[in-house]
Every structure is written in C-alpha cells, then in structure tokens.
Length: 126
Image (cartoon, rainbow, N blue to C red; front, side, top):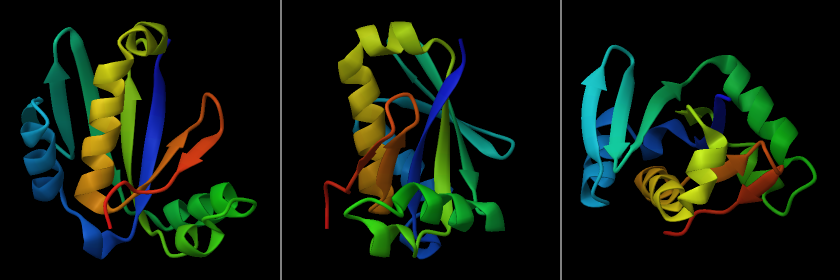
C-alpha cells in the first residue's frame, strides 16, 4: 500500500536545497532526482516532491479550516509530498518516520498533515 504525508509551508521558507541539507543532518542519505528528492534510511526509501501548484493553497485552507492553525494554514502555498511505499512497515519503524517528518518541518517551518489519521501538527522550530 502506497501512502503519503504532507508538510505545508510558505514557499519563501524552504527549498529543495534546504530540505536536502536538513534531511542529511538527520542522517538520511539523499539523492536528487528529476523534480524530487529520494531520502533513504535503513530499509526505507521516501520520495519527496515539492508541490507549489495553486491547488496546494486550496488544500491547505481546507485541511486547516477547523484547526487551531487555520490562520497559518491559509498562508501555506507549497508543500512537501512524501510517498511511503509501505505505510504499515513504516509505522512499525515509527522513529524513522518521525525523523523524516521532523526534518521536513524544520526545513520549512511547516505544518505536518497525516492523512491516515487526519492529524495536523504545528512546526517544531520557530
């Protein structure tokens, strides 16, 4: 089962280069591919795409509308889309999953959205 999580942020807060630097600082091996980053840790590979399409802002507003982060989510116009090949296995290795989520939040001051449980989390860093 392929799944994904999203990290919404304001475009000026991050870039592919910044995401790569933060992921590497968290211990991930990162390769740049066409229009995406591929992050590897232990036995997991994560495909990371930066999406800046107009639909991102619409989606961010929808996800944030009933949350404590409504105002902040209304400003988000970019997101990291992280594909997970096998969500069940990734959840068994929760530390690795949390590390990649944290690295991308730190790289963007972003809001983490987990579609599998409709969870929205604020950034760790200011």
